[in-house]
Amino acid sequence: MSAKPLLIVAGIGNGTGTGAATARVFSKAGYRVALIARNAEHLKHLVDELASSGGEAAAFPIPEYTYDAVEHVWDNIVEHAWPSGQPSDLRVALWNVGVNVFGSFLTVTAKDIQASLEVHVTAGFAFSRKAILAFKKNELDVNGSKGTLLFTGATASVRGNVFTSAFAAGKFGIRALSQSLAKEFGKENIHVAHVIIDGSILTDLSLSRRPGEAGEAWKANPDLRLEGESIAKAYLYLIQQDRSAWTWELDLRPAHEKW
Ligand SMILES: *[C@@H]1O[C@H](CO)[C@@H](O)[C@H](O)[C@H]1NC(C)=O
Ligand SMILES: *[C@@H]1O[C@H](CO)[C@@H](O)[C@H](O)[C@H]1NC(C)=O
Image (cartoon, rainbow, N blue to C red):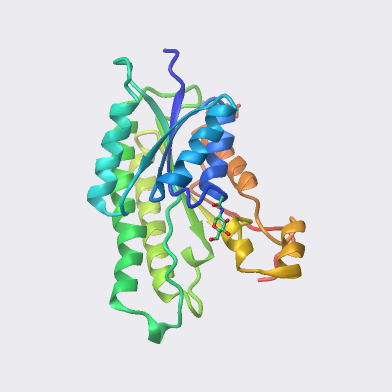
């Protein structure tokens, strides 16, 4: 079958972080890329950029990350990927979605908790279910895998802290799901991996939080922050492992971290 393998990424932000970097790296590695995010405009920019460098990408805006909306968008992708009645070769799915709910515990509202649990966990369950169902239909690839489901984690996936009570609750939850899935579906040759990003990633947003010279110095020093493209290369490494030595969890941090 000559169809390109397909990568689905959920969580693109404004196109300057891990999700977008993964789309670029996988596109270069020969994948067709389906992108899910809330902001249709940022999605379109990224799709145009990938297309202009010879890639094949499509945008799937989602109004919000709920269980139903994720199922719905996933069904749209699958329809889109069969333009000529040819089955799509979905091989990799990345759940890179996050919601910013940071604040001291006593300021956390019911809405914050609900947002963190719904976006990180409940919607992540829907994404995982669709990915697993699709992978189950695949033939094994050359390295013995039917597909890889990746999760972008954070320091807060394993460590609570001041200002992260609501955020960490969601990130712990989705990490737990990834472990359960790795156990249950490893036996069916489906690889599930969770990657703890233990530090700040260089994005437009993280840079805008460090105005002035401090931000410039931080940007200029790759030992202090993570580069989206470097994270994406680690994802590519994970999906190429053969199944006699699969990683469930990886953690990545800049060489000179101080935490
Ligand atoms: C992304 O968001 C940040 C922070 O809101 C902003 O400074 C930056 O210009 C945005 N980048 C793009 C490509 O839209
Ligand atoms: C299979 O494994 C080899 C060696 O690690 C790697 O170069 C190749 O990209 C892998 N192929 C797939 C489809 O994962």
